[in-house]
Length: 92
Image 1 (cartoon, rainbow, N blue to C red):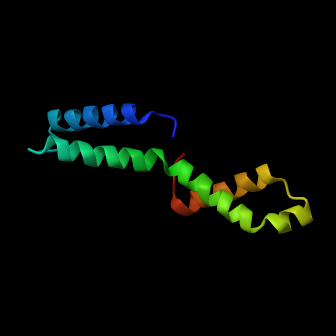
Image 2 (tube, rainbow, N blue to C red):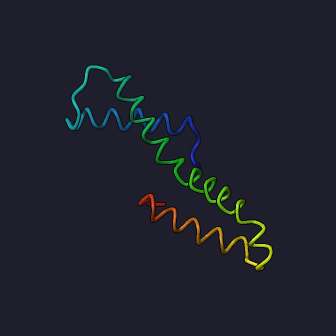
């Protein structure tokens, strides 16, 4: 994640206020709304980190085979990551 958690909290508060002000959402529980927006933002912003972790796990299981065949780790990382991005229909 490239943004600090404090900044994500600030964004969540601002988005929540603008949703209410623009009459997109009606709520009496601003803290609950802000927490849900914060959670959604964190999930979205950490998606690439989670995908990268999954790629590392996958490549670790194939490390012996990659060494035998002389496969380039960076190239394989990109290929596997692209496949996972397609699988999860993520936008990075």
